[in-house]
Every structure is written in C-alpha cells, then in structure tokens.
Image (cartoon, rainbow, N blue to C red; front, top):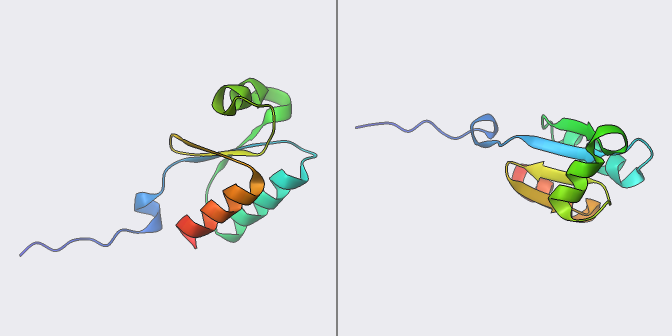
Length: 88
C-alpha cells in the first residue's frame, strides 16, 4: 500500500511577484499582507524598471499588480482577499 505525502504550502506554492511603487499606499497594504502570511515573493519596482511589464500584464499603468504563477491579479482589495483565501 503506497502512502501519500501531504501537500505543504511550499510544495504547492507558485512563484509570487509583486509589481509595486515606493509611494503607493495600496502596494504597502499588499506587502504587509504577504509578510503577515509569511509568503516569499519577488518585488519589482514598477517606478524604475517594471512599468512596461505592468502595462503588458494588465493593460493599465495602475499598481499594485500581483502575479501567482501565470495568474495576474489587480486591485489591492482583490489581491488581499485572494491571498487570504489561498494561504490563510
């Protein structure tokens, strides 16, 4: 009889990337939630080097934008709600 190894957060987690800006209060809220949940993520400063990526990902200039794997999330309230649903 084979035993299955239980899935852990580390084994199911996809790469998380946050497109953010230095003076964006909405970005700070998302960063705080990522830290509270103990999630590893890459932060891309959209003000300096990521604005073209933001436009390509979402079709808009607004930040924050969060990617989880190939999925793109916009709007800080929606991002935080989705992070809590997946990782709380």
